[in-house]
Length: 162
View 1 (tube, one colour):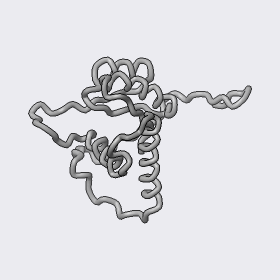
View 2 (cartoon, rainbow, N blue to C red):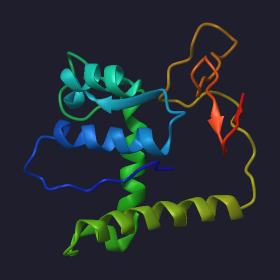
View 3 (cartoon, rainbow, N blue to C red):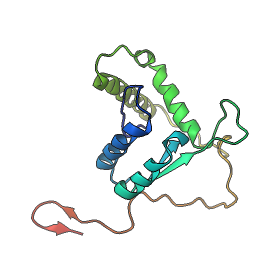
View 4 (tube, helix red, strand yellow):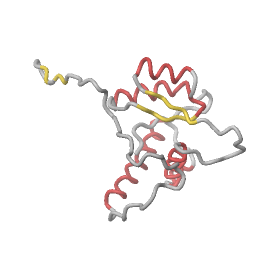
């Protein structure tokens, strides 16, 4: 499920509008702690996102001996999501005059995908790990942390709840 969608012109480098996208993502999803990105988003964007937003931006580098396309551990998820977007006919060609229309079509595609997944019968669980992801040596998976360790106060009215 896409948490946020942003369509931009092709002229600026991807890391320039990525700051705006990460800022929007932080506003709508404050529980987000880690984001994965392509190696093109490395450099100052990693430091900026950690310093100002508190989001750890991890980049997936290419292998040194890689020539052309190769499936990488985290990157295949992004490529798969892009193929899901392109299955919707309207998203294959960009005929929209406004950027907001393109963003709305992509969001609508993900909503359609999620509704189809929620309404289909459940399939049996996978017996082993995914063939692309490497199997870790430890049998116990690492816990997933979505929220910061220190509890934050929630203001509903004039009183504060903890």
